[in-house]
Length: 231
Ligand SMILES: Nc1ncnc2c1ncn2[C@@H]1O[C@H](COP(=O)(O)OP(=O)(O)OP(=O)(O)O)[C@@H](O)[C@H]1O
Ligand SMILES: O=P(O)(O)OC[C@H]1O[C@H](OP(=O)(O)OP(=O)(O)O)[C@H](O)[C@@H]1O
Image 1: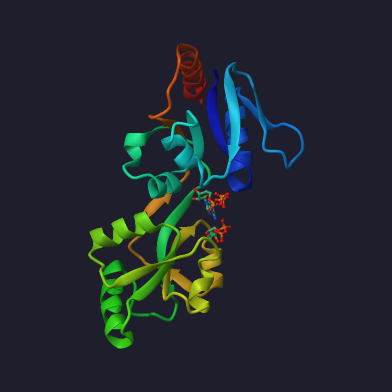
Image 2: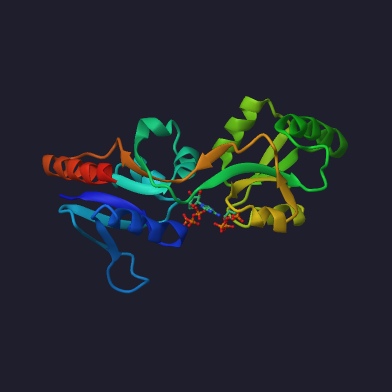
């Protein structure tokens, strides 16, 4: 059998992942048309390319359905409880850098830090009779970070896309999302808290700790590790 390598099927991570492997002598490509989700691998025997959504790769790694996978570490840490028991980081790939931040409306001049957010959240609850809403798709990461920072009086509302629009649309008071250039935040009159990001993410190559391997697959993985180590 072959070592299954999961790579994002589209978007910002796919091309750069192909380039990263290409620079190490492993040519990845799509077969067939642009729209066909099948791949080919040249340069190393016994590897099968599986094209998947970036958001599904953590689950496939945890289930052991793929041996290796490339996705953002933000998605792995968000989607997998005790993520480091389920996957091993083989390499940080140096692209797909993005920061998970909490942002508030520009005009909240008194809210600069997480401590300020805590005070504002308590006041918000007193004034409005409900908890301040923070829109995000990063529920686990935001809850953990806010618990650690002692911020209590808030609720998360789920937003799977266009999260920065939720404040204007009055479905949330603040957002927690990924940013890289900051343009989307600025365009939506939002400002990140000054404490720094909750998490810094980049595209990362992971190995599943849960995928069974036979002898041939183990040897293939060793060959791949050697190629990767050469950088
Ligand atoms: N603006 C950005 N700049 C750089 N990296 C980003 C940016 N936004 C998201 N990412 C990273 O890209 C990865 C893929 O996230 P994204 O939300 O784009 O997935 P997607 O392509 O929509 O995948 P899916 O098909 O699962 O919805 C994540 O790890 C994320 O951190
Ligand atoms: O700081 P910037 O460079 O402006 O990038 C940030 C934006 O990029 C991502 O969105 P994406 O393009 O993936 O769209 P979606 O999450 O809204 O679907 C992220 O969710 C932000 O909205």
